[in-house]
Image 1 (tube, rainbow, N blue to C red):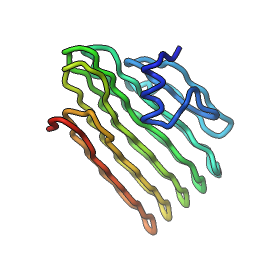
Image 2: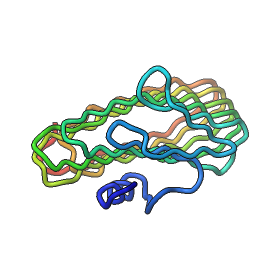
Image 3: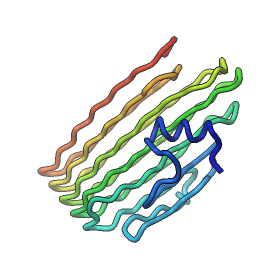
Length: 196
């Protein structure tokens, strides 16, 4: 079940008012909270560790998948390894993000290590938002790693945003582009207080 804090964080990082329609995976405090797949988008637990594998069938058009993460447990640093396989000739949107609620003096964090493989002639839009809220004094860290591999004539648009409340962030983006492929990255880092 989603409590009021969960709902607030989901709205901030994924613009969700509740459980989304279509494919989604909601993770809370290091565990799966809820998951739904669609006819064209499969989500399964990554057998190599914490995280998920999302497979989008070739030719999938105008579909989206939401994969938000909530961290509200004091002292938890949640690490996930997510793999995305976007099939040829597809056109999809992936909405991710992590919201931390800190209510104690213990540090909390999330490290999302994401690898995208975008097939020939496919288009992918990836939207990721990070935020931390709460009155606790614990350190809040968000450390995303994004690796993108584009096949021939593929296109990826990445909108990466930190929208506030984070004390520490180490952000890494890497890409390998095939012939005729292109990628647009827009990264916004906003915060308040002191940040490293």
